[in-house]
Image 1: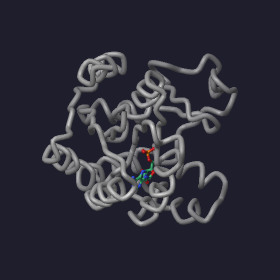
Image 2: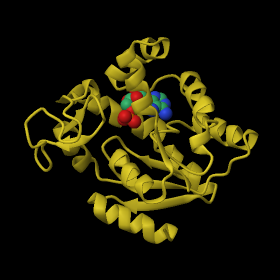
Image 3: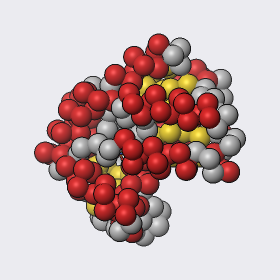
Image 4: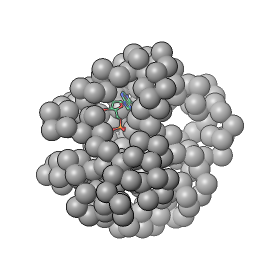
Amino acid sequence: MKLILLGAPGAGKGTVAKRLTAIDGSVQISTGDILRGAVKEGTELGKKAEAFMKAGDLVPDDLIMGIMEERLQQDDCQSGFLLDGFPRTIPQAEELKSLLTRINQTLDGAINLDVPRDVILDRLTTRRTCVDCGAIYNVKSMPPKVEGVCDKCGGKVVQRDDETEAAISNRLDVYNEKTSPLVNFYEKEGMLLSVTATSSDVVVDSIKGKLGI
Ligand code: AMP
């Protein structure tokens, strides 16, 4: 599978991506995770991206395309990938299209996770993330067994810097303005698969059914 996962912040892209890649062994590529790793390590990329991320703004397209150009040509992407959080703008989608042509790859589809705004707001304000392995928890519905400690790796479980109320509200505005037009873009390309995102079990089953996997 070579797929794109679209959806607002908090739509469940990360969780669904992990479940789908576990099925067919394709690799999950999350630009958000790559950027958070760069910020943590203090690399040049991280220094350039940090302020945009903290405010809930998008990192400039040229930085993102630099990351993806390199990443998509690595060996582990050749048999399958799931893009989580990329593309986020129409220029990124257009550049992705020409990049894939250049490196002789074709996309199988773009899945859109459709979630109402009130559900998203609730999810994002209660979401917690492991700083070490990226595992996702929810203080209401899925807390770690020991508060603040990751069940999987023992890392610290925290609220992300960009999950304060002000940053969340900005991320949703940015999504509506810059990212939601991608749904139309991929519909016109004949690649769109829309799924009403309720629980991740229902979403994963519905995607598996539609893709025949
Ligand atoms: P995410 O974990 O996908 O919600 O991404 C967290 C943050 O990383 C976003 O709010 C953006 O600041 C930045 N980011 C991730 N992916 C992209 C992208 N494709 N284009 C621009 N900025 C991005």
